[in-house]
Length: 224
Ligand code: GRF
Image: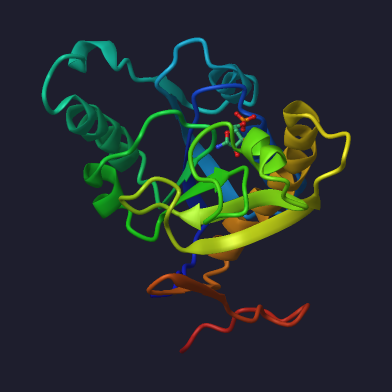
């Protein structure tokens, strides 16, 4: 499938923490390099800095508390049903997971198939999960990096949209490597959103093809 569309893309960002990727996307939108609108920022953590960043930019922000669902056998699904309602209410077209520390269930994955992305600080499929910068160093990898991928049922597993690599230096600690990877995250995530907004991502099974853009200056001609 490809992602052709006409109006300003309506995006929701799900984040649990500091929200620097959210910030990179907001900045790119404000700078005009990404043609999208963040219509909702949603967190499972009340104190997430991401929510504060959203408020500072006048964006709608929502804390959805996981506590009322705790202990239920379907706690994760029930939580995602509430989240899905918020997404639907805001006519969200693309969901971005940005440091969202909660596994999304099929409720969201199916509703947003090929319309939900995640950013992960490794060159997937190497090192899914947590503490991945530390693992890349411990494995003696010479390259690390980050990946934007569509979200499927398996954690950190979906079709890869964009990747960026950074060298691992002899003196690297997990924190120094993470900081260099993060710089690249802030470039490729907005870029992936813009490619989606331009309708240039075509997904075929595991592979995402990036279709050619319009030549500079070409305008859209509507059929008469
Ligand atoms: C990033 O490293 C991202 O790749 C990972 O979680 C971190 C989130 O950082 N999924 P931030 O909240 O966007 O600053």
